[in-house]
Length: 185
Image 1 (cartoon, helix red, strand yellow):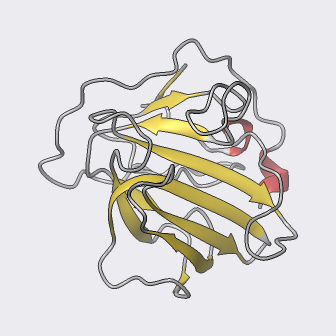
Image 2 (spheres, rainbow, N blue to C red):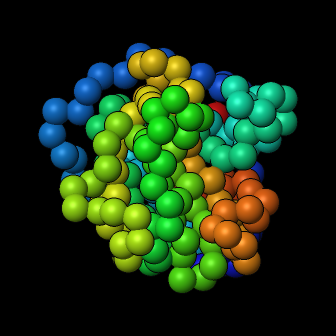
Image 3 (tube, rainbow, N blue to C red):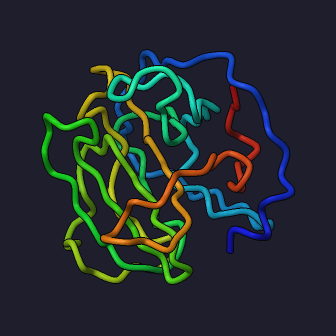
């Protein structure tokens, strides 16, 4: 639940780009953080670079328009559902800002958006129910991400959700249980 994470500290962004990563050769052991925050949306190894860039520059919306946080990783690192819910929207237009991605509507009426995936987890489709920690996709650079700048763009939009997703976004960084192996900028 989001309320438990509101006391987390905030850090300031020093970097807004993600460069040079290599392909993940095999799945790593999952690092789980058990605290009061929101489940971290990616497998944090072998690379985890959290760019605290909410409200920063966005290719799509310009200055102040970045509505999520970018988490740098290697291409193919696993992406997980942060809460139980329904995959309410599947983004498949590679020419869109999102590229491949999901809109996850949680049981607590929060919309989570996952953009720039390289692929979806096998067997999932729009309308499917998922549980917290379930694999839903893989980190990539689709959409308006810089080629080779592999990362997950992650948004948090607390409800209510008229037509699945028009609620304003909030900064995810203070809400997340960020694993200690991650660098935060």
